[in-house]
Length: 391
Length: 168
Image (cartoon, rainbow over the protein chains, first blue to last red):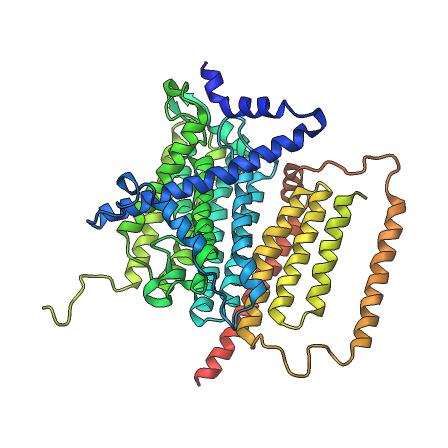
């Protein structure tokens, strides 16, 4: 029974595909998985918009949407109808073809990333050898769509927003890759299902997730920072800072194309959270060995939604960074720390199984963090703020 | 030579031709990206996962962005009035034909050197490529890394020099 619940979707897909002639079955199985991914994540996106608006409302001491349906949960349906029926405006001087293609390229490349994420035991669309490389290749392609959107709009705010977004995405892609490389070094494989398998062991009922090691914790923190910047989420949402740039690169998009951009951003958030879950939080494995009877896909999606809640929490809590702070933070703090983390991961690999490696690796990372924080603080003049007129 | 190969080849060629023939420079850069994507698909069709994904990651993720930024930051992307085509296109055509002839000759020559009866696509995993790069070929890899670092420092120095002069 436990086994069957765990594999319920896989078995259902087998049963469904079994009705077709044998020659069509492989194609049909792939198509079925693709359709499930294309339906499931937009549904999750609809759910998340309500969650986000409700959560932000709670943080900001408001009620949030509460008119459509019970507790406002039908709000995304209303939003969807609205964006479908709105006029699709293309500026007169805009480059119509590129303007049209940009949201499509964004959504397609973001959807591709889900192909390699293991969403449960045996639940991965394409279990390729170089899965992590594929994921990052697709992530890198989204930058071009952002540029296309900003450039084709013929609007200075759009172009500035796109330039900011691309500069930010390129800067934070380096730490994102580097923090993931530590996981690859320890596992010895680029295959995401292999990485999950390597974490799916238990000692005294506790899991061997990579986040519970010194290098894994440091790597996860830096991965989370880079992922937040990569998906243009607050506090790194300068590319669409409303107070400066109207809406950044999608200023000139309306109706359903705007909805596609919105969808693409949230899908990118899901896929990057899914990758973080897979790399550091043990993917679909249970947090305690006695909870092993709960189906694996429940664990994957719980961890995914937990990461989304953290994203929402951060957005409600932190103020937006300035452009120079953003770049300095990426190149002068996060990148050196990820490089050091690679060394520490190598040390961890070759120090054997004793307790020494815990002490040595933790000490190196902690000292480096303190030293770099101290140096960084000494340069800037950070102290109690003096108000000119309020004193 | 399957249908898939011809589709990808047509995509690559169409992208390359558009990159040459389009008038707007940004459109050319975007068309070049299509050609890069076509090449990556050709690599994947040949079961060369590492080359294919690295092609996407480096060329579409970095080189295309670099090209586009360079166009935006150096001069206006508006089409000049007298057209984008160079006047000495005949010389360009001759050089292109020469390069193509050399490459074609090299490819045709090497086809005979392949071991007969071997598998059409040798199975090379990403793991093997990694081991080779960090084992046997570690010195060339380091030299390439050094070269790239030197190029980057050179670019920074060139940019800094101009800034100093502008301030004076």
